[in-house]
Length: 161
Image (cartoon, rainbow, N blue to C red; front, side, top):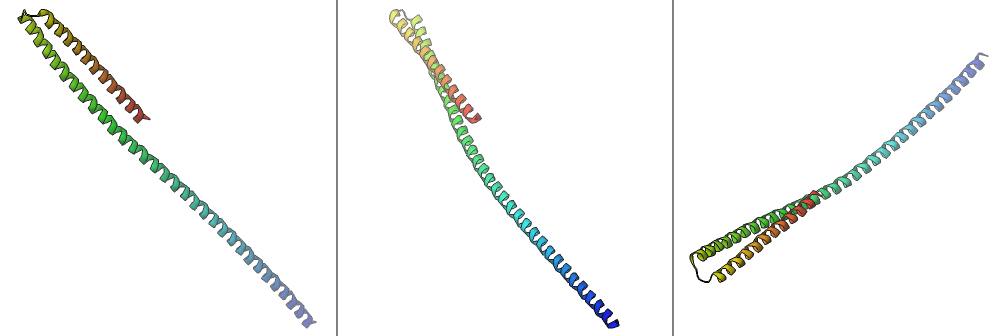
């Protein structure tokens, strides 16, 4: 019976060994499955991160291009604004020169009228014409300045938007 008990003990140990082997296999399989799941999750996160970075880069590039366009537009509008201001200054200067010349001529004519007793009617008529011309020139200068001011305001409004 000692042999039988040893055989039974050996059988029990074999069963325990088989159970331990099965448990070890199950643990290895479970670890392998967990590792595969972790790798799959890591790959999903990598893909998601890569996609997010790509989308962010596209948006950054789009916004950069839009910013560049706006900067170019601003430069262009500033050039136009500067040109309009220069033109307004030139028109104003030319108007002042023309008005001063007409004023001088009018003054000379008035002096001539006072000094001379000849043809008062003709000189008076010329003076009246010069005064009208002067008034028209002043009006034109005012209108021109107003037109330039409107163009400047329009440019400023365009730059503001």
